[in-house]
Image (cartoon, rainbow, N blue to C red; front, side, top):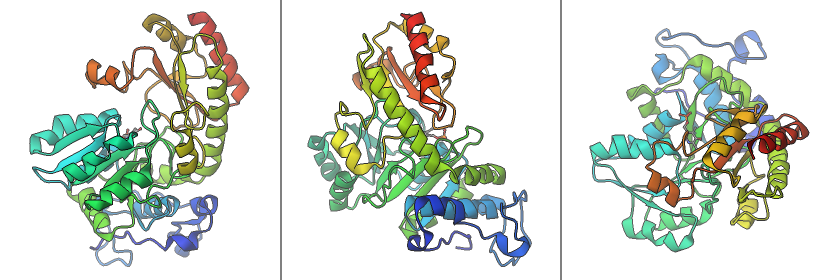
Length: 391
Ligand SMILES: *Cc1c(COP(=O)(O)O)cnc(C)c1O
């Protein structure tokens, strides 16, 4: 492989906060620039010492970002893509007709759609189970899948799956485990250390953190998987733009401080929301009331920044609540510094059939908050007034 994807060993990186700022600085030697240039070039002079040939198969901005992401995920390799869905496409493109994939039933909507509407046509088979319930683990050993696909916490219900336990079961039948780590973020959760083969990120969310670029990444310790990902990057044309990679590298430098604030805000927010009269339920991994609270504390550094709740309102009232909110912008996506609010049933999960969606708990009254890093008192005052106006 001519692709420049080598990463230094994780041990030499220092703590997360330090690695986020200091790993991947290979541009420095020539000019001493403290911040990397954006390598807006489609091609490279033949025979250059960096091993670059054409930006579809590698660019210094990808290399910087890949090295930093690998360090932050605590593994050897990362490969970057144009979006989270590109990263998912890269992983699924390694399968062949007849291969079976076992998935958590509550995976991200676009993951479900990609399997159902695209890869099914090519003969890739899927089976969905509630993998937050250990009683369903036997399906993995029974089906001996080519991949096990999980997400934790899940979107939008924030179920927490036992990554170490599922990885151990999958290992019995040599099934690689992919963990979509987007909702937790690299700072909060390290799937590779817990036994997963691949940790997948939509870097659009917490990694970049500023809602100004799309991106995705697949991180691994496995050299063969890294080669497959680098191959998919160039063979399927899934590479990001150098500028988006640069923006994501910039965003990563503050991931640790952002995630601390996201989590402290979200915990306070969830705790208060839980005590509001009429609210049916509030899910947040670090709330005592969360069904997998113990596991969440074991597996995650903090609860991350997403809170999902059933406000106990009708569809009309829920819509009115969302409109009345001043600081929570009604929008898809999550993980940026600004607070967002989303109605999964009509937005992110609209492509999932109603029966399927409601069977997993995504009813019309459910709202998902991406709690930003604003002042918690301003966020809370805003939600109180919006609830009053909606109710
Ligand atoms: C957003 C998201 C994706 C898809 O990422 P894009 O960057 O939007 O393509 C995949 N998985 C999860 C959990 C996400 O939240």
